[in-house]
Length: 134
Image (tube, rainbow, N blue to C red; front, side):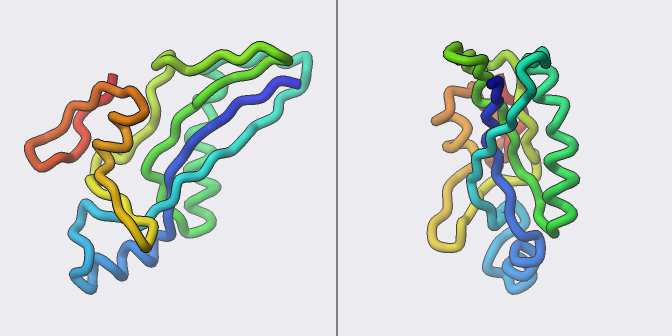
């Protein structure tokens, strides 16, 4: 079986708006949780990082239909039987450049720190918003 692993961060848009309107969060802070999804492909299908990356927009639409905002989507790996190919920056992730900090409701982290811990070279503005990833 062929599979692709995708990591993404999304959160209920209503909770983020509420926290921002109540002045608990600034505009760059959002509520979000880290999730992983595995997509299965048929044995005869050819898959690569570009093909899996073409699903980013569908993931965003599916989350928006559930009243969630998507802040980050990244293809971690592709597996074909016993062969695993890691995404060593073959495909750039989707990220929301308006996000600076993410909270899961109990703890929070800087988006920059999360991306840097995944091995990305992160370029930020002086206010720590993400400008570019390599």
